[in-house]
Amino acid sequence: MPGAIDIVINLHTPEVLPLKPKWRKDFIGGKIGADTEILDGLPIEKYLERMDRAGIQMAFIAASRSGSKGHPSNWHLPYEMVADVVNKYPKRFKGLAGIDPTEGMDGVRKLESAIRELGFVGAHVYPHWFEMAPHHRKYYPFYAKCVELDIPIQMQVGHCLLYSRERPLRSVGRPITLDTIACDFPELKIIGIHTGWPWVEEMISVAWKHPNVYIGSDAYAPKYWKREFVHFINSWGQDKVLFGTDFPIIDFERATREIHELRLNKESEQKLLWKNTLRVYGVKALDGIPAELGVAP
Image 1 (cartoon, helix red, strand yellow):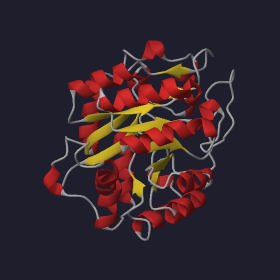
Image 2 (cartoon, one colour; image 1 turned 135 degrees about the horizontal axis):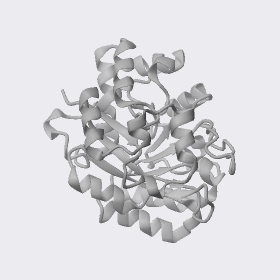
Image 3 (cartoon, one colour; image 1 turned 180 degrees about the vertical axis):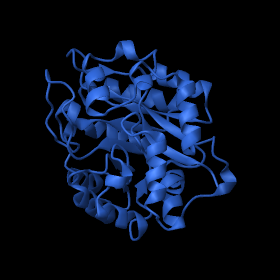
Image 4 (cartoon, one colour; image 1 turned 45 degrees about the vertical axis):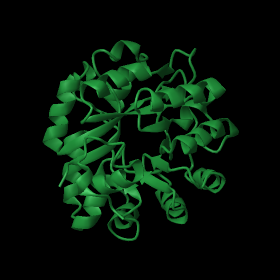
C-alpha cells in the first residue's frame, strides 16, 4: 500500500521566508503554534524527513496567491520556486497553481503555462484574500480553463482567520457558493478545502449533491473534526474526502496519527489518505505513485 498523499501544503523554507509579509511570524508562531524549526525556515529536506515519519509519500505545494499585489499584507509565491522543488523531488512533490482573479486573462494564461510548461497538477485559490466569494464572475475564466486543462481546483471554504491586523479579511467562502459553480461547471473538479468549518454540514451537502465536488480535510486537526464529518468519511461520503494538512498549519505526524486514532474502517481510511486523490487527480499526473495500484472506483 502506498503512503498518504497530502493535497495541500505551504512552503516555509529559508528561501521563501524573505518573500513573506511581516504578519507571518506572529500568525505561524502565535496563532498556529508552530515549532521554532519551522519559524526559522524549514529546509525542504526536513519536510521530507517529517513526511517520511508520518507515512506521507507525496504532497502538493500551493504556489499561493494571497491577495492582489500592492498591499504590504499580501504576497504571491512565484510558480518557479515551487517548480524548483518539484523538479528536485518529482516523486515526492507536485505543484498547484495559485490564482489571482484580479489578473484577468493574463492570470488565465499564467495558469495554463504552469500546467503545460511547469507540470503542475491543479489550481488553488484563497477567495477570502480577494474578498470575492468563490462564485464571483471574475473566477469564471479560470474555472473554464481548468475544465479545458482537465485539472481540479482547490478553494478555501469556511471562515478565515485574522492573519494581519492591518488587513482583516471577510469570510466570503460559504460552502453553498460551490453549488452555483458546480451547476455552471458540471465538468469542473472542485475541492472545498479547510473542511468548510464552521459550515461543515453545508459543505457535506454540496459534495453529496454534486458528483464533481469534493472536500479537503486540511487545516483542522483530525481529533477536532466534527462528528458529522467523521461519519461522512467513514460511510456514505467515503469517496468524497481527500486528505490534506495545509502544513505547517497542521503537522504531518499529528495528522496521520490522529486519523489512525479515529479508527475508521480500512477501506474508508485508504480512500481518505490516497485512493480518492488518485482518482480525482489521476494516476498519470502523479508519477510518483505506481500505476498498478489502481484507483478507487
